[in-house]
Length: 232
Ligand SMILES: [Zn+2]
Image (tube, rainbow, N blue to C red; front, side):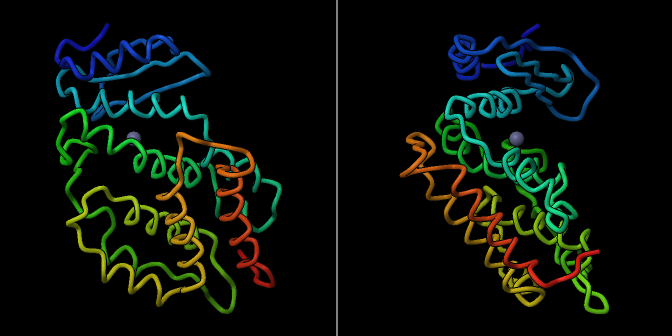
């Protein structure tokens, strides 16, 4: 059942997407909305007590991005699972998270265009996405070995601040601490992000504007970075 509270703008997007996808709604006792998608069949779960147009619009915008047919998180996961070193820190959770951050960046302009506020884009939308304390806790190397969980955390933290849609949030210190911890890893991730910001999802082309090539540049950077290192 379609949530009663959703407004015309979100309904419009829903109707538009229904031409390509089979979208249904289900009630669930959750804090926010969730989406489950299998090819063209989509289920959006929501809690009627707290649902609003913005949270439904958010999930619909993830579906909308499917039309551009790019692959980031999944591509990273599938191309690195046979790599002994990279697979230690690029787990499914982190790859999905990276994909989500990339999605959010590309759907946010349309979300604003629909007339919604930055605060409602994400749960706790205005807050800082990572704390200095969390970053300080990351110990990348111990006795000369890299710790896979810490690499995972480093990359996740950096993506969370790069992808924050609230431009007023000041991450100067966060960036400083991350650079101090590992400037090479920092540059690999932030270079990828800069390219993603500039990437034109509306004109994907296997030669001139390829999402896979872009994602492979991140994987290549990480492969070079781990070369000669031991990761435990
Ligand atoms: Zn999302």
